[in-house]
Every structure is written in C-alpha cells, then in structure tokens.
Length: 392
Image (cartoon, rainbow, N blue to C red; front, side):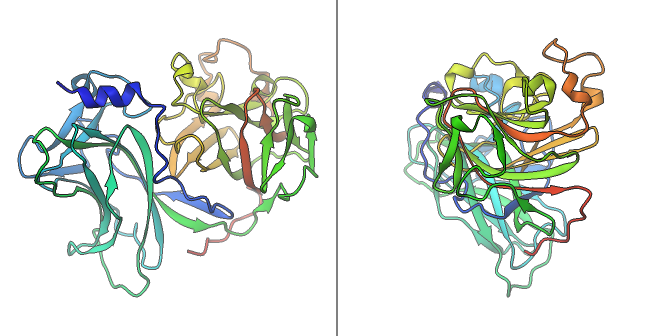
C-alpha cells in the first residue's frame, strides 16, 4: 500500500523551510531555461530515468498514486528508488550553461516509504563531469525546494549539458522506498539590465496612493496592515507596456493580488486586471476555480500551479505586459502566458464583464483582501526603453 504519499498530501500544511528561494532578491532576476517534460507526463519524452532495476526508476501516474492534486503534480511524477542511486536526467540546449554563472533549480519532492531518502542535484557536461553539485537533500512531505548551483568561471566545458537528479545510496532502505520528484525548473540567476527603475524607496510610501492606511513599511518591504484597513494601494504613476519585477512573501493561507493597468478607483479585477497572489497550498483554497490560483489573471486565464516557495518564504516574480499579451514568471518558471483576446474570445471564465481588459494603461498596485502579505524590491522597466544584456 502506498501510505506515505497519502499522509504527505493530508499534512501538506507541515511544510519545512530547509531549502527555499534565497532571501537576497534585490536586483536579481531568474531567466527560465526550458526543460522538456519537466512535469513527467508518463506519455512524454525528454527526461531519461535510469536505475538498478525497472522498479527503481520509473514514472508513476497520478492514478497510481491515488491522489489528484495539481499543486504538486499534474500528469505524473518520477519515482527514484533509494537503494541503487537512480537518476532522472534532462539534456539541455548547447548554450544553456555558461562558466561563471549561477543557476537555480526548483523541484517538488516527497519521500515514498518510511526510510530516510536523499537526493543530489547536479549539472554535468558532455563528458559526464559534474560541474556543480548540491548537498544531499532529504525528502519529506511534498514541498517545493530550490538549490543554487554555480559553475566555476575557470572551468572549460562543452555540451551537451545535463541536469541530473540522483538518489543517494541507502543500502538499508526497503525496496519500496523512493524519492518522488516533479515540476522541475531551471533558471539562470542574473542581474537586472538597464532601464529598471525602483518604484519603492524601502522606507515609506512616498509615490503611492490609495488606501495607504492599510499598508506600511517593515524591514524594507511594503506590508499590509489588515487590522488597520483594507483596500488597494497604487503607484502614483501609470504604465502601459512594462516589465514589473518584485519579491513577495505570503504567510499560510494569505491572499492578495497585483493590480495591472488599473484605475485608482473601483474593483481592479474588473476595471483593470488582477494577477492573483495566493498561498495555493492552503486547504481552505481547495475549492477555488483554476483562474483564482496564484499567477492567474482573475476571471480570465489560469496559471500553472506548484512553482511557489513554501509559505513564509520569499518568491521572485516578473509580470510582463505588452499590448494584448501578459506573461508571469514565478521563481524561474513561466506559469502564465496569455493572449488576452484569445483568452476571452468565447467570453470570460468568470462569466462577468471585465471592461478593464480594454485599457491600454493604468496603475500598478496591490489588492488587499484582509491578509498579511509582504512585497519588496519593486522595480519597473517600460518596454519602450530597450534593455541591455544583463551581466552574469
């Protein structure tokens, strides 16, 4: 019986904080590197599983697990046995890896069985040499982990490069023990290029309008004060096409939103657009519509789930709005890429009118929903300003 995964899903609130997105976020951006079959569709290709036996490294379908929860997986997971050093390998594009550059790897992970199971993450070159390897990461309940791997600047390496997940040898483990992984992401850690301007000074709400009583500054971050007031906080200036980068942190069960091209009055979700900010993993949100989860454009289009850091950890996010296209990158994964006209051709998912979709400019802001949420390192680049190459 597959008891351990079921316990993990039932106790999803017991996230550990052992390895999350780095707290140092100022001026840092994550440039996604595509991975084929990063969600382990059993019918897909692009990831090679290897192990000492057929049962030690293979795909498990969601049906086999007996649980359906797209916060952690969609079509399936990779099960890597803990007895024989099993691997899951992704071959990367030839120019994906550069010496002297750091990369952030994200993945959902859980332990199946009762034995302690650990996994290593590494990047190898075309000769099979490890260019960077993480410490052993212990699998527990389902959660999202992040590791940073830095490629030495003095190394000579050529592709094809490979991102490898390998279970550590555990000779005492039962044969049924395994590490389950899913929703793999890989991103280049880079600095902002030219053209980005801060829209928050880190000290006070100078330059912001709206319900300032419900917001304030704490430790260099804008935070909500729901006990004082609710409502929305907006930039005093307006934006048409732009790239907005920021970091956010939500406690368990928290809910907020990013107002985009919004007027300074009215409901931003309808009079402008609202990109959801939400702790997807909390049980109280289990019944939400797909277009209500984190990164979704409220009422218009859903986002991918499962790429958020555990509650209480900082996340890096980018929202890019250009003409009728809106894209959201969360912790180095594109979780939403929407053509607004195509998304609403047959009507809105909410079934309501969203006149704000026709707006071509408006304020950025935060949509308070009565919960404590933190935002920091807020900066914007108008798309009319060309961005220089980032220094890596």
